[in-house]
Image (tube, rainbow, N blue to C red; front, side, top):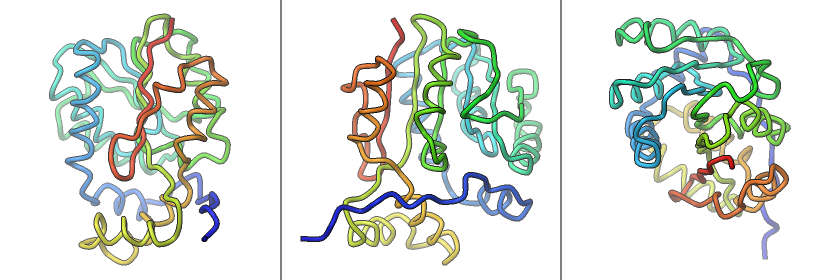
Length: 222
């Protein structure tokens, strides 16, 4: 019986202009829309939103298009990602609702309890110490606020990596496919995320598998 797939870290940052443009060109439209719709199903009026690891700000743009009252502070540690994000936000006409800021997910230095909703999509697998990032997200959330995090789930073995790659990255370039496979290997398992949630005094049952390759943590603070 093969050994379970161990976590293999990938670079924490994608921070060249070429990487940012290549990432933005990848087709995440349906994934981003589902993220926004699933969030709004839980919180139709998310209020003041913090998006951690926004990348090129596609999710804040989608969220603002679907919900006309929210505002978003979108943070990332990669300056080139934020440069592309600024262009995307301007093109969408959302500059009055989306603010972009350079910040480290592990230590954002943002105000404690400053947000009604804290979201993050596909940043946790980039972080060597994901528990620090989740702890900072909880710190930024007001009592009663919603934490909504989604990321890749590490497959059980290399055969499962290859199967998911063939299913979801068949039309990507070889470079994009390799990036997807590396991200799967760098991701956390459901049990690992639940252990972090437990340490943060969140209900481990708030972490669920929500696709063949994603987990979601959806929890309100007391």
